[in-house]
Image (cartoon, rainbow, N blue to C red; front, side, top):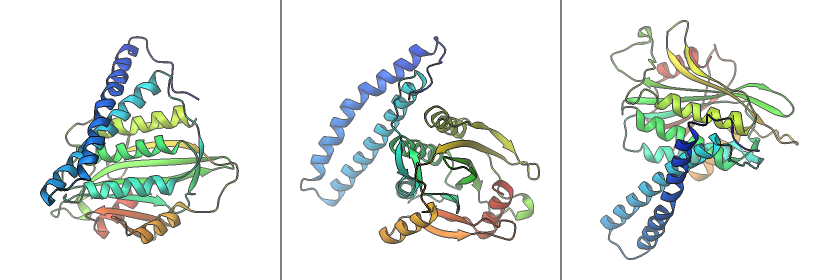
Length: 301
């Protein structure tokens, strides 16, 4: 299975250029990471250790961006082989959310990930690529919005058959302004900085799901009929293993978070308007109860 080879001929040279640059940049970057790793094992004082750790984090993040560019270029030129195999959603989300928690440690904002309790933990796909895309979606969002914002992501089960799971991914930003009340239509979703950051990250994830996992997708701003709040919606399908499992994603995440003393908090949440139970992974500053209820009511329910 490969990516989308039906690319306009005029865009191929540019994509090839990005692919080449990303590939060539990874070699010296890997050398830097290896060298700094050796330096970290030597005798350093606390200040030097902090400097080395910061270099390691920055280099690893830069490499992740390079890999994203490289993968996207290969995807668009039809040269992105994928070998699907049984994987776990919980492993992807736990690692990505935990890493995001560390990145947001010094910020006023946070991330809240709402998960449908019905979601199964196992799927059939390329866990490395899916994890990379989820990670970059979160990283781009957390870098794009102000410290006073909360990134909100909802992953819902739309439909499930014997071999396919249809999912809906909703992303947005809540501005927790103390001067506003629920009657002022909290939360307010709006974009800051680069106005295309959110759409590009979601579109990239949709492109992967559509081309590599074989599912359809729908991208675009969706306007709430009540509150007039724009949000980004992505619907895609994920193949399920031949032998389905009854293990739920929420249960595995709670188990992992409890066993490993995760950087994020886990809580169950629902109200009278939402008979479907949801699990919330809270990173950094948590949303207040009123704001969270509004998110569930207006955007996700």
